[in-house]
Image (cartoon, helix red, strand yellow):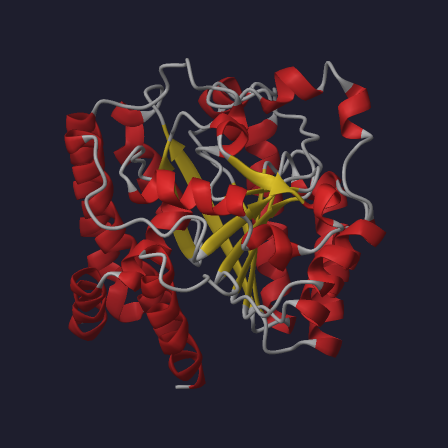
Length: 376
């Protein structure tokens, strides 16, 4: 109930901000790519290729002191996504979460991982869990190892031999921590690309028997962030629709066995799948997009983006140039130009993170979410 009391005024404000009547206020969802360091060599992402060859760029990532200045200039957000690169390669990741909890007071913290440095990830996860248990026990914390196929096929897609075994090892170790941390959720996620689209049923069947709290999948996209704009990685829309039909059936068959929090996330996912199919087929926005209003993306170098799809092509500004003052950048003329670009329909993508916020802002879609929850 407290959540809805908090979110309803934001929804109204975001609607007015999209129409350029008032300023957007603070975003609901912040994604922070804490580092571009990554051991993976994924077929769907070229971050590794560019930045592993430019170590001086890695040395330019935000320091913990700079991060604190940025967070101090922000207001409350609800979802704090920590991204990368590989997020757990950031040695001060627990400090970053501590600062986020202090200044941003998120309700949910989410981290994806490639699972390659298993022992390191497990160690830092335990540090984070202990910190949250002592200081912020109400915060929901989720970790999502990526699993794009089974066995050697996963290793081939991720470009690292033995990666599949490391995912499975880490997944089971993370699950074992849940007995002592009730707000800790362990997920698995698949990037659906042209390389695995025909095997989705096999992959999903394997993952379902592992006992994951949730199974997320998103479509491989051409994103400025990943330097893959010219790569043909996105699956055929008709093949994607067939794969999604299987996921929809799987989710609906297990909805009744989920706790309320999981039913809510699954209901959003069901609505998102339908929207993603339409976006791919029609190549247009099918509901209004609130990128740069409800959501913000912070890069390792202090850039603020409306979303990672536009990323380097349409940045809103760099916080180092704004004295680390988020609100000053967020309400500036450059940020407003990016919002106008999005409002005018110049882009359309099925990015999951942003789509969930768009669903929340779109009454007909939100009604469908509520309907899926009540059916369960």
